[in-house]
Picture 1 (spheres, rainbow, N blue to C red):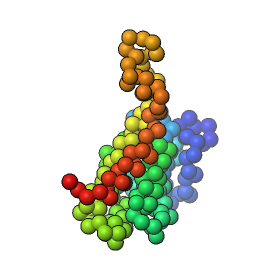
Picture 2: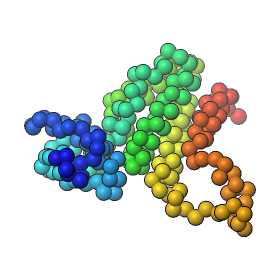
Picture 3: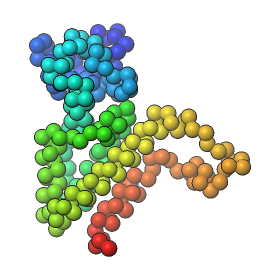
Length: 217
């Protein structure tokens, strides 16, 4: 199996038959997506890579979309939310969570669109949401406003990761950028050359967290 071109580095070793599990399939699918991209993924390729009958996955997931839900859940599990600084004020928890979410997504650039386009409803995700709302409520933010805060941070983080992952996967190299000294080299192009596509996350996150402390207009 080590010579199989469809078997990427980092693919977990399959369990002994017949103990194929949902968790293993989701983790293996994520490894394949990391290695080959989302467009090239298929249930058949997954079965081939792990050395099982391709139809075996359907005993654990109804279809590929259900498997992708499992992949998103496996990605969320990487956040290790239990080790967030829950004993500190909510801003510290929110900042660490957002940073972990960004870093996790950028470890899996091919899978960011998958994570971004489906809700994660695993027990761990739901428990984390409740825990976040409880933390913000205990720190003086009513649950409806707390949920708005959490959604804003999540959308900002995922959107940033999506933009960075697209650039890292080659969109930036394919774009036609104005050259210094050329007629199209304006102030925007100059500023873009002086910055990076991934160097403003902390600026935005800090501004958002400070803004949430201000009274609504």
